[in-house]
Amino acid sequence: MASVDIITMGCSKNLVDSERVMRMFEAAGMEVRHNPDSVAADEVIINTCGFIGDAKTESIEMILECCRAKQEGQIRNITVMGCLSERYREELKAEIPEVDRWYGKFDWTAVVDDIVRKHPALAAWDRHITTPSHHAYLKIAEGCNRFCAFCAIPIITGRLQSRTIEDIVDEVKDLVARGVKEFNVIAQDLSSYGKDIYGHAELAKLIDTIADIPGVEWIRLHYAYPADFPYDILPVMARRDNVCKYLDIALQHASDNVLENMRRHITKKETEELLRRIRAEVPGIHIRTTLMVGFPGEGEAEFNELMEFVKQQRFDRMGAFAYCEEDDTFAAKNFDDSIPDDVKQERLDAIMSLQEKIAAELNEAKVGSVLKVICDSEGDDDFYICRSQFDSPEVDPEVLVRKSCGVKMAPGQFYNVKITEALPFDLIAEPCHC
View (cartoon, rainbow, N blue to C red):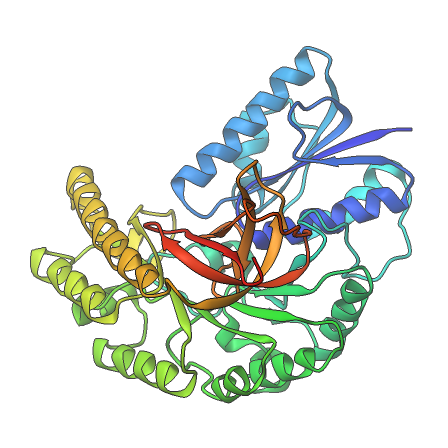
């Protein structure tokens, strides 16, 4: 049986595409592995990321590593797909001729036809789940219409392309039948979901519909956009027990000067009102955000304003990164990337140090409380690895449940646990009936 190794670089949206490729090859009768420890197969497919500099470098290094393995006879053919090749296909072809096939972000669906000359009769959303069987990512749209100054995503993915509610519901029902209980809903811009096909945002209707499906235990929302936020999602989140009180919404900055330079179409005051309303309408919600330091126009005053904003808002989850100029973006064409790298790093370290202190304080406040968690794995000798509704897989902290009292926990099952200790990010707990 011919073998295929699929390597996924980058985000969860890329992972969904890789899972679809895996399923297509399996239906064509091939043996498929995902992210193997050592690559050795008839066909190797690298699903690349092209979002920021570090991710592009990692993707290129992986391609070159596979080329070396091909020269050594471990690989017969190399195929590259995804965001990096969507953006730089012709340049990459010239630089790395050892690669046998190149696809972009959207034409990769022909990969099975081209390799095995067979097109499996599958639903477009059918895929091989690579995450633990109890949770999966649910991609509801591709592309973005926002064109923020720093972001290359619209250049790579094009404009918003939403899936229909009916199509998404069919996929969810199929995944539930396969044992999936937790759905992490993803898109480049959740806030705009449905505008391209329905004429208006339909995120609230979609989530309400998914929440009705028997077997859907948790729904978690990732990557909302603050401008033109769909406020009608908030009553759904408040009313539905199986919609997690969690929202991932990238705010990027809090200085009006920087926000204008970033072309975010929102002000600091509007951002503060958005956060106030979210928290008021969905009590107990945990907000995850991403911030950027070092964007052109961010002087000491603007950075200090951002730091004060973080102090006041006390985000439950927060990530940050330093600005990196991306080819062909508005910022690259119109601003000088004049802030020194060491200054960017100092600001990044400062804001993440502040967030670590805030996160520790918020965690400490949970000690003594009872949380519903899902068990992800048996962990080590001391702890089961679990998560609450406030913890998205891979990016957020975990709830480590002690094994000392002898209570057995099974991956994919829900339990009530009592928080006994707070670490800077993770929580320590024990089963309630221990």
